[in-house]
Length: 311
Image (cartoon, rainbow, N blue to C red):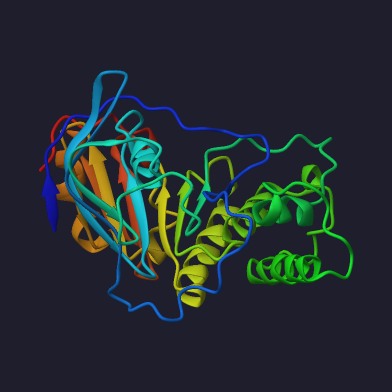
């Protein structure tokens, strides 16, 4: 288990109207990824890292490692810098102390090997853009002009867009206006958009927010499937651990005084979480053996008081 101490403060995440995109500005999509990666290959590595915004320390002395094909949750209360951690990996927020490597090099903006889905609102029901066009924006939304029908560029685009639509199981509604899709369907299409350039690393900022319980479970299972089939490492920010807990490999838990990282069974314990939050928390198992996190007086886990100190 990895334990580090540091300060944290409030951060804000971007919410573009057309959802998530790859972090790339390249005009040509990269070749297929993942096939040559070792299971233990390091995707993200931070050692004693710190980040500052507006002259204020967001977090410091953070050390963690994310490997190829891992599904990793970033947890913690509001204002501890979860979204800032994703932005630091993206190269949008500088590391002001310590060391960091992302895909073998220093974090840098515009990395074509990173897919990113920021925090977002639901699409307005009146939005008429089709789901398939939302997905395609992740492939060629930064290009000028319209590809001529029958050209190699046109065929390659159409083929890859269809591949990721199939991957996320969105075939039945991909040609429907995005505003007429359910919240879970919209999230699947946006995940397809972030995957269309075959990233090695996928960063998802609260993708389960505002979804119903069924959609949360469906999208969580989809993300795990992508980790396995595409060899993509996923870092997902969440407030509620319960929908994703059965699918996780690692948990990064940020508090106002430190970060704890390890397998869910090491981090999601009554003792650890009660210490982090400074209030009694029970970790139970249901009839299927799944962990369930329950706060005092039956408060949802995501609404528990902010932590007072790290273990």
